[in-house]
Image (cartoon, rainbow, N blue to C red; front, side):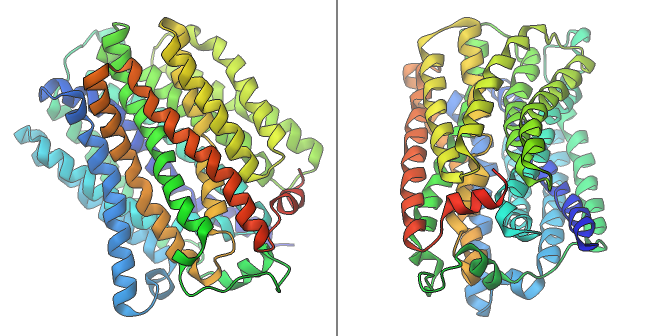
Length: 482
């Protein structure tokens, strides 16, 4: 009975890196309008910030895949998961160093190069940390642990825009409207130091370096006669379709918020220095949803899990309100967002812990949110577009869990292939930006509708594929206490 606290302690150390991923990703959404103005970019050109950062995940995953093939062994199986995370943190730290010469020379290319290298390090971290989070404990609650880690990630996304905005513009009350490119370098140098320190901390922590992937697959499919043993991760259709699902999921999540500032500024007249609370609420919405989905990760009774499902989302919303109030932003305009949170809680409860069902319900809600946003203006459109973050919140763990379930020894390879598809965040953002230059930002959100439509399809298809392999998602959900 003494191993459980140790597992949670190890997991607590691991999810530190999830915080960094969120902090940097959300901070990019402040950099986009700043760079657009400072370097006189079009909307499509400004999205190169997202392209550089997210395509780095693809390049990093391809490098990982290539090295694994060259040495005839999976990289993480050789060097260890903990060592892989530490190496990724140090690579990201090197990327932040480029912000210093980039800011001094006002070089957009160097800025993009720095973000690209940070993304390369994140790719290795994610390849190691995501499957590790799933298997550190009972496999039946792996998706909830990944959701809980995502909630920590989105605490980073909530405060990231506020801190970076403060570093660039100063306090809101100071009334600064012009961004200084040179002011970008300090927060990223501090971030690089934090990367290095956490790498050292994790290296000497008790986070496991190796995991038994075949044992995990046996737990997922107790009917050994139906369990499939294929030669390559590419032979598993749930993974191949899941790769495209990750592409469009990250695409709609990132493109919606990357293009939202342009809509708020050009369509509603909100100045750049006042965008932080809107960007922060979008990313806080992911935290709200993930804290809700993480209720199943705790080893408590069914009644307590239901209570946590009601309490945790509003606790997360309270965190958003608190940090924005401290930053001296007017948060009273967002109180009504609580009603949208109630809708998300209902969708979570109706899914009963089944990742395919949750993905389907949230995809449908995302489609409705975008349609409402494009059909309205003013505050209604703002709430609708921001709520896309709420309905994207639990999609990552749902897709990831569906895609790697049953892969066994191919899990690491599958994880690297999924991380590769994070490039959708950059490419879909660029595509929406290009469409916005043609038809206007307001109408460009049709790109997100198409992404959500595929995710609804994948939810249905993956569930059917896993049933054929003897994996019952409802059985796994029941084991989680739903």
